[in-house]
Image (cartoon, rainbow, N blue to C red; front, side, top):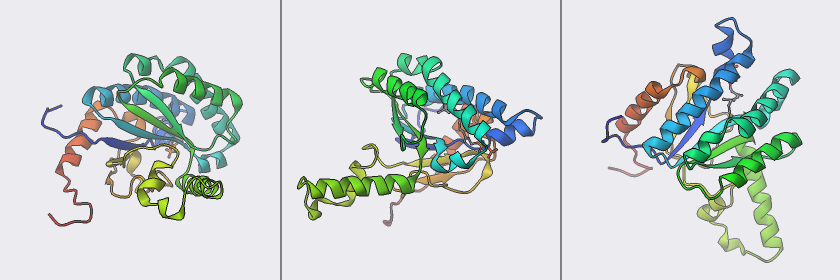
Amino acid sequence: MNNKVEVPNHIGLIMDGNGRWAQERGFARTIGHKTAVATLKDLCIYMADLGVRYASLYAFSTENFKRDNKEVDFLMNLFMNVFNKEFNFVKEKKIRVLFSGRREPLPNNVLKSMDKIVEETKNNNDLVLNICLNYGSHAEIIDTAKKLCNMYKNGEIELKDITEDFFQRNLYHDLPPIDYVIRTSGELRLSNFMMYQASYAEFYFPKVYFPDFNRKEFDKALEEYNNRDRRFGGIK
Ligand code: FPP
């Protein structure tokens, strides 16, 4: 990558198209998810090397529980195995892993693998990988509203303390705003992904399915980002 290219501080990645990638090749959808893991690992290493500070990954939405039980079970097992066995690279690259989403109804063994990787990487301060698992923006906003109501009820805050900035800092994690949302597979939707954080993000919708979203495709995304004129509602 050319050194002059500006790298977004916080990237949101909606990893879409795993199932179609597999089906178009005559494979089971699960093969698409497995291939996506390899793509994701390499992309995380690349983002860390390029100096991306935050990456939020949409791994599983609250709505994904409506999928066929077999696929949900497969994905839960995949997540657990990946976090337990295939996440050595996060330690080597000094990547910190966080999770956003509701713990209920995630299986205990998955929660254990998540807690372990969070604990093991808590002192890392290179790329922060925020994995959105059983995540939904609506749920996050409701959960934050409830948290603030409790703080108010307990006398810890006053109504005037609830500013936009305070609300943002009390979401699942205190992360900076998302600069660039990338959704693979050509779908033009946000699908309940980090709506509060992405309110001024630029959007990019490459046609490729996620398993094919390699370094070259990421470079194209960065090039496009550098062509955008970000005004944040002001006039230039
Ligand atoms: C969307 O593709 C993808 C998912 C619901 C799962 C995402 C999971 C991974 C990328 C695996 C690795 C992730 C981690 C965090 C280890 P889809 O199945 O909806 O594709 P389709 O739209 O073609 O059906």
